[in-house]
Image 1 (cartoon, rainbow, N blue to C red):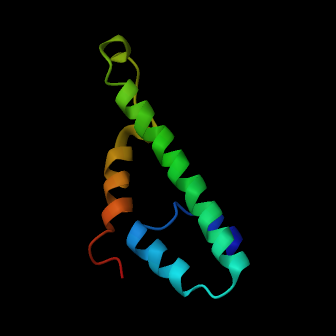
Image 2: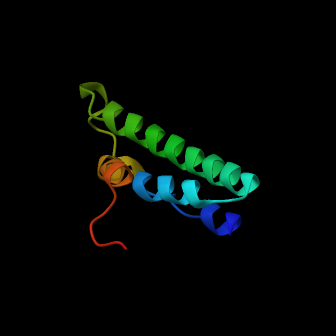
Image 3: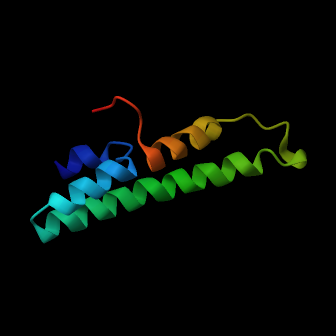
Length: 84
């Protein structure tokens, strides 16, 4: 399960909170938190890059994976409608 979760984009905060609260095993909770933290750190780095590329000195640079990071951040905080 951990390897599959490691390959994912992580969970939205509402579902992450739920999963961590029902995980009975301490090691499972630690693994969930570690992977989720890694995913959120990646998203934060992409958000920073998104903001930086809006600087007038970098307007000629193409957007890459950070181009929709702001939408993914909103989804991560609020969850997506009708996912579950």
